[in-house]
Image 1 (tube, rainbow, N blue to C red):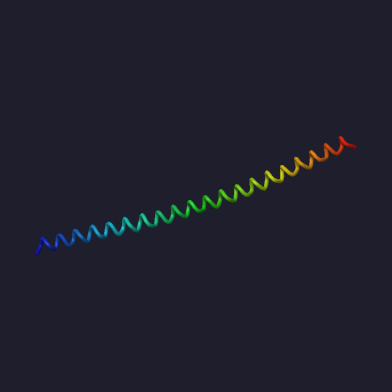
Image 2 (cartoon, rainbow, N blue to C red):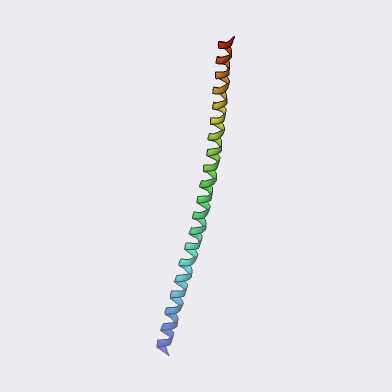
Length: 74
């Protein structure tokens, strides 16, 4: 009977440890997924700001070139 009790306690300890490890890894994976999604959103915002900046600069260059060519033709 004492042997069975030791086996039962060992099994419960293993199951408890497995449950703790599983919950820690699950929470870490959720946290890591959240961090990755946050980084993707930040990268998307940065790309959007950069593309807007380059479009504005491109428009300035085109308008400047139009002014230069207009002065040459007059």
